[in-house]
Amino acid sequence: MAEIKDIVLIYLEDAPVSFARIEDIMPDRKKDWYQIRLLMLQIPLQVVTWILKAEYINGDDFFMNGKSIRLEKVEAPALPGEHDDLPETSPENGKEIDAGESADSAEKNQGNIISFFKRKNRGNSQKT
View: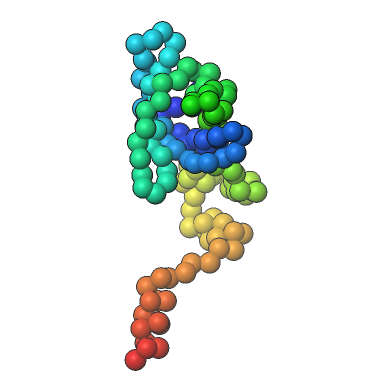
């Protein structure tokens, strides 16, 4: 079941129309129904409350004003090989690594550090 703070994609007539974050899920006075409060992630931001059954919150189709609607929980895609090269003694695995290992890890990842501060100063010096 989608839970509070999950992001869902809302489909209208099988076409994606908006993203929303689940702000709250509370039981409704009708048995087996829930009040689900959604923050619509669009401009302007808007909060709506829909009364739905658990199966609708879990992705089954339902109808509103005669139109088919479906919620689909959004999972952030994993980047290819994102955590494949982490050493067994990385902080992510709950252990600390020494300075030599961190330098090796930085070389493996070949990441670049870009200083926005230096870019800003460089841009200012060209104007004068």
